[in-house]
Image (cartoon, rainbow, N blue to C red; front, top):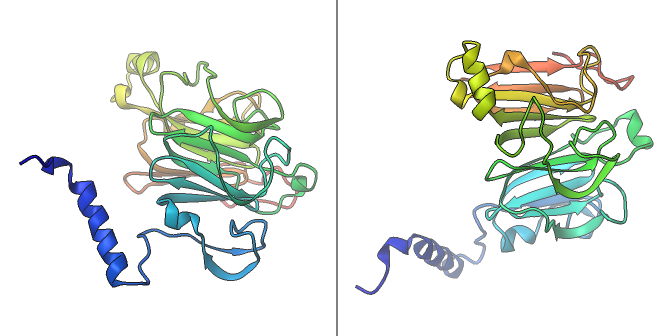
Length: 280
């Protein structure tokens, strides 16, 4: 009667896993990572022409991975973030990492996005990419290239993950949770939970369910005909109030998938890079 049986769920799972190890020499955790490619990007520190098991996924329970331009990020079950590959800013403050390295600025992370990998003309002159991470509390961290102010920080690069504290008419970072974040080439797309004054304003103009409403925002160089300054957050009012399952950024356009299965696409029809276009 001295045992706290109501807390034994975790212990039971641990015992089950150990029994699996004893009875099956080939046992592995439920989720593992395999990597292949050049030595400086695999996280294994050697060339891998075929998929090879990444040891990090044996010692850490990884629940999500995100790929950038010759780089990989992994989120563990406890919300830590590990990184390996080419740096986001190619700077001594953010060096390349052949082996998985923890980003100590990030804790309790539940989602992470990086600029889509691929070739763009400008990358010959400005190597690197942008990143955004969301914590369990809905806080937003950004880092990497910031050529159009899309990371909501000053300067052309943010060398380490940094909490976004900027606030304005479109979004109050301290009061409104970020639900989704996705990085394009020169822009950042957000889906935020509306509360307080924003929700009251929507109620005053006759919008239903305002207190649980959402908004989709973009910042940076996204559409040339929107008539806004690149570093300012702007809302896509046609998506206001939609409950999103995913918000995914391409190089120059976005896709939003609702919980009802509806798909919305928006962005630049031709892209800002001469040879890249989008079919919307």
